[in-house]
Image 1: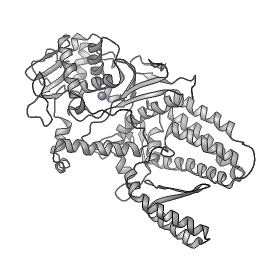
Image 2 (image 1 turned 60 degrees about the horizontal axis):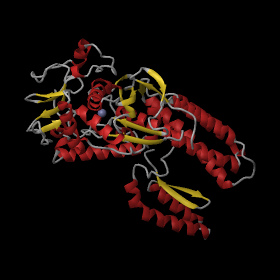
Image 3 (image 1 turned 120 degrees about the vertical axis):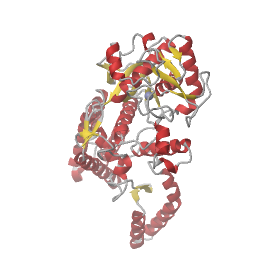
Image 4 (image 1 turned 90 degrees about the vertical axis):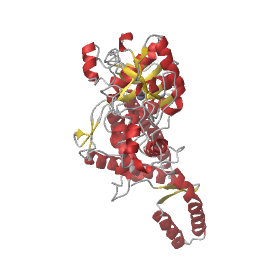
Length: 502
Ligand SMILES: [Zn+2]
């Protein structure tokens, strides 16, 4: 499908809402800063990753192809990176020393564990897998190479303790964050001068020399590890080219992380780095800043795990709750909002079940819904194209649900088929109704283990129904239900899926 519709996004760089014009027409190339895998990502992190997912889904809905890169930071992100350059401890190394970290034999095992956790949560939230998910530790050579070139070009220098980017050598530094006077920058960095040989307190680390660090590599500047900012400049350009379309991340990344990424990349290439910058606002929990110490903190697992350990909420209801406000507005994540999202999603599912049943029943009549649902889909899409206005998009989609539900028993097969394809379109765009068909969902491996048993029981049930042994057929259905399997009977036989959360 091609379309003359355009996606508009608020560009932090220009502070304007702008239509996105990809460099290569019809092909959107974008990068979204991923997590540091030292712990389980919290739902605030996922709000920001979800923005990237929605950019991708919306771009695809207007016929664009996409190359979407989201990294995994598994080295070099220091505890104080946000305000004291090269200060603090590597987050990964510190996590290994914690009580939780003691279960891991090495820092690489810790990284692997939390990467696996991230990928499971990612897929439970029905977020599309990036085209490439590079890890910082897999791109050390390219980072060393970039640092060498920055030194050659006079944008970086070496001290006893590391290599630093010289902020004074890049006059546009501060343009993204608006921290443009030297004084503001110093204040923003609140530099605890960790290295007294730094020429300017604003300069930030590209390489940290440390022969004792748990993750270290040989480099022309001695053994050590790369700074956090350089990884994203290097990996984004490696996969997307020197200039690409969109760079996204949480609002906390505007400064210093993204400011530093621009300085590094543009000093290396002399070209603009990313044309659009998209930032997601923080999530609040019950009206307050999310914080581990006050208990105002959720991981997806806290919410999804069955009671009493968790709250037993379906992950896609959490997805809906995270989407209930537009990414650029603060979102207050409350218990009430989660309950509302569970109910709202149930209305979508109920209307779809009606449509499925009406298609199966096959009652005659002309399609009375198709055109009206098409118009509602366009309104939903238009809301997403308008700076990912998810709350307006959900409200528009709800009109479709009301329309379908309002038909009651009058829903004929032709109208119901239109409703089914409408649900598929809405789900492709918003992703909260059900898992994409190509996606086995969060428990694909469990499905693999269960499959032979489930298939055998389903065959037996089909046979029982053919023999009109309904008592046996019902007993099998109950047995499957107890296994957490939902059976869906259709004209072409029965299919099944594993119930998630609930
Ligand atoms: Zn980044």
